[in-house]
Length: 288
Ligand code: GLU
Image 1 (cartoon, rainbow, N blue to C red):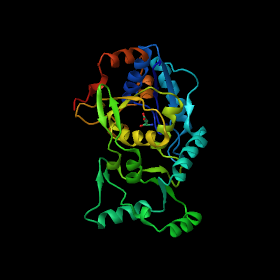
Image 2: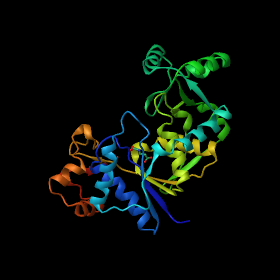
Image 3: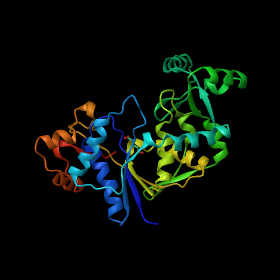
Image 4: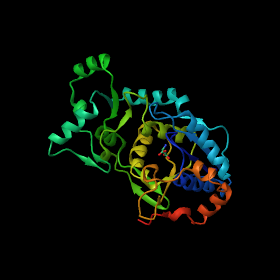
């Protein structure tokens, strides 16, 4: 089967060097194997998506000389696909409505010495999972709610799961993430569900993305099993850090590609330098 990779940015800001590096790795992984490289705009967060950033992403990639196959896919146009997946999970009682506010969850976690923790901090304590069915149904009809995965039930149904990261086989530990949100109160789908559905729908064979998403793969692998979707190969790459060892991010002052371009940088030359591991501006690839 021919290789298909994708770059899947969220248009919540301008791209910086770290995005360029990730995109180059995904692009080259496909191109070196005669495969296809796709662009997917992950614009499911209505509060944070900015239309001008969608155009900006396309401009930045074109400037770097990175071409993608076909039209860029917009997640905001595919909500029906995700709703279908969520319905399938509802029908099997693998998800439940959650009415909790962030503040209520934080208060409950703070009040409980035994609150479960995962790779990203405190986990959802399971409050709404324990609601009696009649209360749940009445509240779901009247109150805004998110949908959470019943992770223990789902993991038990799926059994042991594995995925490959480069050459390494990794055992998935989805229960360690707790009952993640699959549809939000203010957005009909969450990152985890949309990315899993789309990687399968777009027949992505190899997911090349930053190491910051390594742990999320546990959840994606579980959703693949539950929805009977194929599992791509994963290749999580090291992230870029600045001279002080801080992860490259806008909040740490990382310059956007647009700013570099405005300052006269040459896109293809920058892409060549990143390929050779020559990071401009004192940036480097994290070693640990
Ligand atoms: N949209 C995600 C982000 O910008 C990346 C999704 C992925 O590569 O799986 O962080």
